Length: 79
Image (tube, rainbow, N blue to C red; front, side):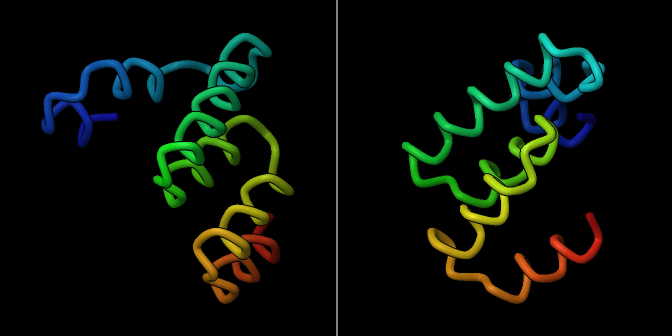
């Protein structure tokens, strides 16, 4: 969150400072993930899907859109 504050991206910094165990913030993270996929910002989308508790979506984005199979495999193993 501090990194996004330093880059003057206050909205993302505020979102990342939230408690993602609450359904409200998990839903917001998922919506942002889908919006980022539409904008072709796949690495950020995968991160937001992980925050939302949707690892399958994150792995799909990493493998299909980014074609980074090694990262998808690594994250799949870590989760």
